[in-house]
Length: 161
Image (tube, rainbow, N blue to C red; front, side, top):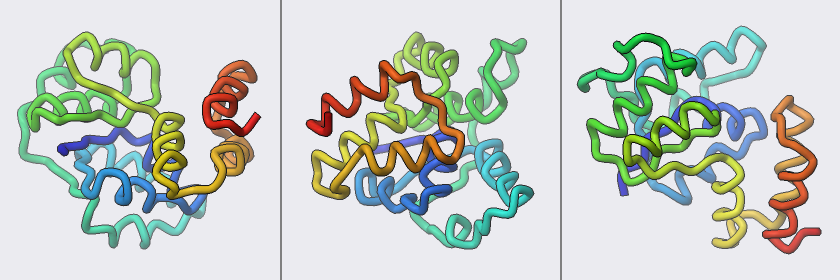
């Protein structure tokens, strides 16, 4: 399975020390340079990224055709645009993306997407984690935004409510 990621899934899992969930689920993740640079920006807030930098299963790609990222702005950031470009170039099976506008655009282009909440559900279904709630609460403590309604829907769907 070919999987490309935007910044949010990687950076949020990195912040709560659960980055390896992505490898356990997908084996290998491709990211464009813009995503790599956005993740490196976490160092400015004091996050040690040596663990991220040493993960050989996260492959940064720079040699691909960029189409969307060259178009006039569509209210998506460079990381999202390059991730969509890379997903198209690699004919990816999945694009890991949370931002709504980028996800909608990717779906319009025929790319299958999944966000962090979906990844947490898969992790629980595969017995990689015991509790979605525990990780979701850690994410919220670290400024991950989720509506109360969606929070309850996710917990109900994982039998944690």
